[in-house]
Amino acid sequence: MTDIVQKRGFLFSLAMKIQRISEFQHKFSFLSSVENFDAYYVRFLESDLGKIYTAIPWSDLVRYFDLKESSKGTKMSFSPQGRIALMFLKHYACCSDKRLIEQLNSNIDYQFFCDLHLGFDRITNYKIVSQIRCELSASLNIDVLQKCLYVHWSDYIENPNQLTVDATCYESELRYPSNQKLLWEAVNWMYKQLRKNAKVVGVKMIRSKYLKWKRRYHNFSKMRRKTKSKRKSLTRSLLGLLKKFIDFEAELRSYDHLRGSVQYYRRVATIKKVYSQQEYHFRTGNKIKDRIVSIAKDYLRPIVRGKEIKPVEFGAKVNKLQIDGISFIEHLSFHAFNEGTRLQATIYKAQDLTHRKTKIIGADAIYATNKNRNFVTKHKIKTDFKRKGRPPKDYKQEKKLKSLITKERATRLEGSFGKEKEYYHLKKIKAKTKLTETLWIFFGIHTANALEIGRRIYKKQQIAA
Image (cartoon, rainbow, N blue to C red; front, side, top):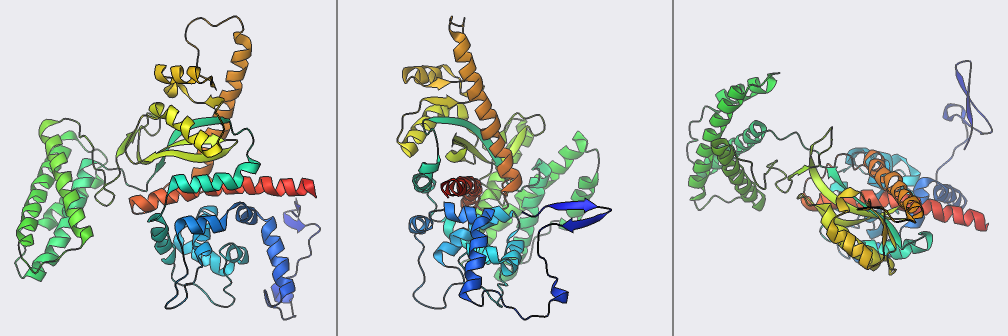
């Protein structure tokens, strides 16, 4: 890479031959010949994106996703390999779908990665990224795909009998779900749908003073200090209004010529459950079990993490194992679970991947239950669990090993959480369904893995050369 130095407020480039387009008189065209193609392709393989490309077993992934070229109709813009590559590229570029297509149109390295050459053409439909995401999510099998990836990467993974484990939450893009926000979203959606349905059926819309409640909610939301009496009063009013809409919706459903989509009936069922939960909570003051926090994402649940800044998070909780810096998903759920009960399952999962007996495992204090201690002792697995009772005479050497295991877990594993969230588009997951969120997390984690493996492959090739 060219060194850049700053001198007297100006940037000077050293040892790089640069030509400005405005001063360039010669006609040129990209990829106009085989010579140019080879030169660009070699440059692409030397980049970080090229390293990811060399690390991915494309043919195996295409087979496991069961992607095929359509034999009829217009040829698709992206090949089966290109569709999978676009998902990896999404997390490498760490940008929106629209921005991703804009960069793909103008970046020749991105086109190499996606098995695509646009030339003077342009892709204008950025929703194709979402369509491909939905297509892949329908056939995603995490266990099978991770086995495929490990087999391809196994030559570059050292010490497969040593692993670390921890859990994290990959948050969904969601506003903070207060009771009043949730009820107003339900009321607002029901009102708009009922107006459409009443017009289709030919029935007069019921009187509800919707505009009055809309102004009242907006005034409430602008308050800096929302007192208990204000919250209670508004909640009571929204519950009454929502009940009125639910009853009217049931009345309209009795008309034969009213037909709704599957998504419509699912959303109505979610709203009915929200009403029953919020009405019970308002009447009794008890905590809501299996609480819905979004009418659009009814699969999300509050996950109490106990962190100082974020005591509650909303998204997928993932129990993750790591072997030599390469991360794999052991368990993913949108419901809260105690990761401490999953230590044995993690060891079995690692042994199934590596076909090696686990000898060392690093995990934090929540995994150090009596059941897990007995299990690792029985199978002669070394851990960094804090020892109970009086330490033995030769504890000094054991303590040194425990500190090394803890350091590995605290630096590489916990560091990977922050790296994936900040640099691989997992900080806020913007997918809209449960399946696509799961796919988003899978590709985010394994894009980071592919880059690490690609760098190891490149380093090995450099040493061999």
